[in-house]
Length: 467
Ligand SMILES: [Zn+2]
Image: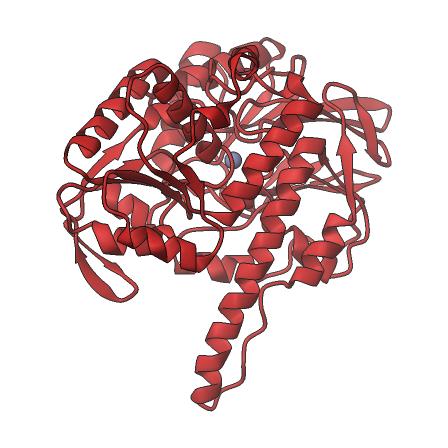
């Protein structure tokens, strides 16, 4: 069998996509979008693994960098199934509908400019109709029960602890009377996160594709990070500043909302105005609530107990969910202190840009970075301490206090990645490290070499790995 690495390789962390070719079948694992920087647009355009027949598509979790190019498959005529856990399919549908709207909006905007210049218009990468078509092909898969997905190929999903419904996928391939077992870790979450269960690694495998986003370092402890966050909030409240949090709509936004409910409930901070300024984060929060009643086992026992004590919304009477652009713009007129959670998570688009433009120059503003920032993104520039940035073509001085809160990451740090690998290592699998910048990937490779005598492969985009 041959596995082709089509993204999240060679130092990239976005665009996760792999094709698995056996004697009898061809399966796509993930179909992610490349994000961050101009180069990404060009990478997203070419067709994904469509020159030959495709039997099935599997995705580990809903994030755009793992699912964002799925509508291209329906656009190119793929009518087969897309398997993932039920909660992942919920999240993916939400994300793809939003992504299609953005693609259509961007293309219309560019086309207007091109037409004025006497040039032909551009097509969106894909449309809402393409997204709806692939959503029709979604097939829910259970956790921990192998299901047939293609001739001679079964798939089994297990908890990855990264976002609601997230999974690692084991492919069980029968070829020439032999069975081969290949695992794709997907994105792995940190252990002991307060909302999701811990990841549950597979054992006895022949090959492993392991993510290495934070392979080079450990995050600060979650509790310490909470204390650090509370101090930031207190400072902002004392100086009537705004706290801007670029949030990925799904995962971090819900975690922070719950954390603020806890801080108010336990009188760590007096309630003050908060804005969930993202229609998608508002929808995602509803999906979290729906899954919470439907499948409580997808959540950590501690959060179940906390919600049973008292509904979260009772702590959050000053939280406003702003859906419309007009409501979002109104936030500019709200005096501090207040907290604004808005997308995009890497500050490369979305409403957070307006808030950053209006507030970065003020020293009483705090920006809390709670997720991964890809090289080239505005978020990365802020993390790296740039003193001047450009937003909507305008020069903006960065006088705000920018804080990186690694302990709120949805990704496992080095120690937790090692814990995951320790569980699969006894079967001595071939290890492929993907989804990490070069330095992180090499650090993790070195550590695994030392501890398990494994010799990890660090593929580039386009590499083919045989098993
Ligand atoms: Zn992810």
